[in-house]
Length: 262
Image (cartoon, rainbow, N blue to C red):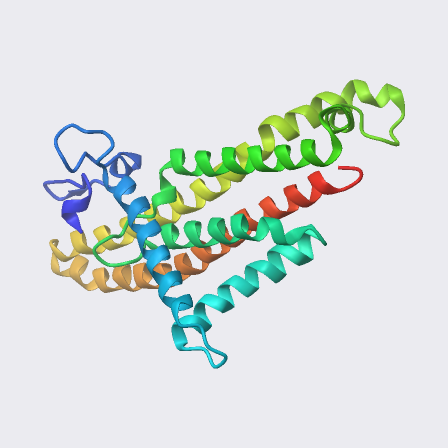
């Protein structure tokens, strides 16, 4: 664990982990595209592809454990995040929602998997890319469904609102649709993964540092490790929840773009 971070102890002073520990050096030379988070993204795509190919390769009426797991995740996204949120046109968006949910989930899980121990989404660039893709998807859907003139008109001038209110409401709506939605979508995912992993590092590395101190500090170190283990289980729940929330909000935005009045 120590070799993964720039954690240093100067004498008896504990230097806690910080945001610097999330900026990992390139694995190969000075190539900025060979960092651990980038390799983890590729690894997640490979693992997901292998899993769902193997789960569907020999599909049967009585499913195997792998087929059952794959179908359960797919059915959940299709029904709970697609059909119930988007409505009757949901099926054409299920592949995107399913890919989005499983991709975020696996990359979040990397933060608690031994030897990997780094949630990819704690690097904000990845969260921003996903937010921009969702931003492009729901605006494209809205423009295709309503036409660009009506779509922009409904954003700028919300139907059923007194005209003087537009002076205040129109800038808010423009900011919401063009800035706030993709920004908050990305920041929520990034901030939760960043903060959760930082807490885990503090308690695990802090417990390790206490073991190197006086006898009284050694007696305290098990509590730090125990709290770190408890936080790991809590972080697992947060990782699942953040994948769900990101996909849920994406479905809500798409459903709103398809509504007669969005």
